[in-house]
Length: 462
Ligand code: ARG
Image 1: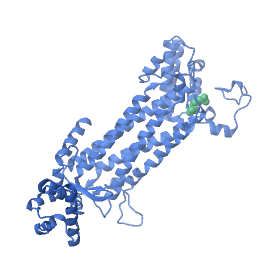
Image 2: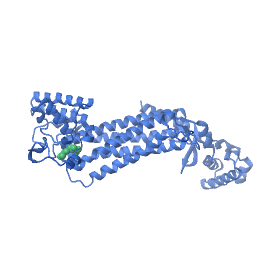
Image 3: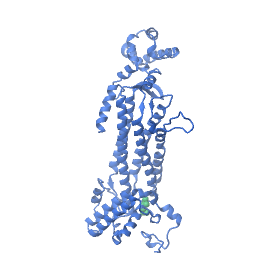
């Protein structure tokens, strides 16, 4: 081994790596984010090596304490990361050697960087599942707050972005609470599935040392050790599940963000975004732009990009570890950062925004939004088949449209000209309040239904 060769694995090497080799090979530029998990894993491993008699107690103690010193150096920013040492694992171990000398070289007994990195990354992604769940819960609480304030504020419900039927503001907010509830449960599922320890799989085949994998699994908060050492070092499905759940959640956030962009426009005025989550224009003084919502709308791009990226890295890789898998981290880091930021921004926007009940109501009252109520009345009170009722109502809509008025403004005579079974009673269903109040089916938009769902979620979110 020359002086240039890598001190961690350079025994058979006569020369050190080319500069380009070092550049393409090193991951320390990004995997230093795994420092805390790496040290946690190494401390658990050292304690286990001592408990099983593979390492002396005094060596294990020196290692465990030295690792804490390394961690504090990294956390304080004084640690010198070295590209020549490739990755976080070797940077930490080399520094440990500076600090404690010979026992540092015993830490890697019965272990490989392959199970080490799989463990570190699992721990990190598991933490991000927890962070995503708490970000989602905070956003859900903000949405429930909005829903509670406006459980009976009438607004247009849309299909095709055309006015469909009146709904309530609370109902619309609670739709996102439901979607986010499923998002959180996806992160919970993924977390449960990934919570098995790869540590002790060693390079790929396990080890001849009498290690105790249950012990390290427990110390790291895993439910159990992974049952197949090849699988343990080869798979990254846990990261793919995290990314997939993130992409779905980001898609939901993107839809909501799009609604906030539309709703805050001068043409809609359904909501006013707070100054704290808006920006101005450097040329147009009147502008207040919903930039935060637009950026949340866009984040799905990089999150889905990361998802596709990692699938592409992993597809076709023969078992077990290949260096390709070092490319698993950066995009996951970026996707996780993007998701957490998007959730936090959305929570802030929702908490701060103020809905405009008058604008919501007046929009709900236009566009013949109670036409379905009229058709339903004809079915219920006049005994018409729904298809006929639909037709009669269509004629009345055309009549109102020609006259430039809304359905409740038609006279009884005009109504009767479309069908003579219509009576005065029809006007009781035509107002938007009557319309929403009548939709009492489970999960419907009637304020009593909406309040029941709010109560259920408030309980669940405490
Ligand atoms: N930096 C590597 C990674 O991120 C660690 C594992 C290296 N293992 C190896 N056999 N070279 O994947």
